[in-house]
Length: 118
Image (cartoon, rainbow, N blue to C red; front, side, top):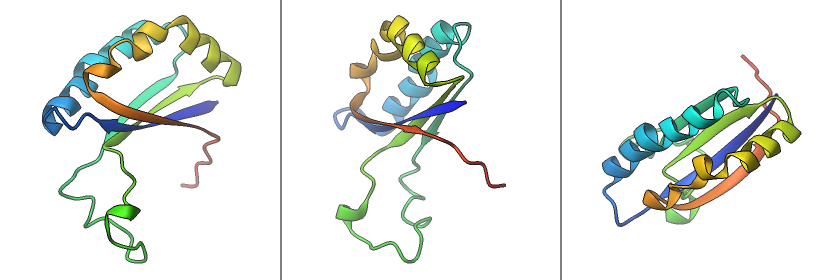
């Protein structure tokens, strides 16, 4: 199993709650509806809570804006393997990315080998 993590910076010209709502409701329904039957194994959206993120920082992490991650949340999607992920994303590019300009300013992607500890 392979996981794709997309670090998302939401658009600044849209209220945060509205952009988050669009991501969770419209975009996620579009992605999962088109890709679940095609091999997408799991899809999770993680929203950064702006009121809690500073309080949850590790005490050894330096403070200040240069040390912030610079994202408003991240999406995790799971696939059987790398080739399956590539085929699925290529075949469903409109579903996966067709409306991102409605709420996203920037996306950074990581392909990770998840190691569950607990």
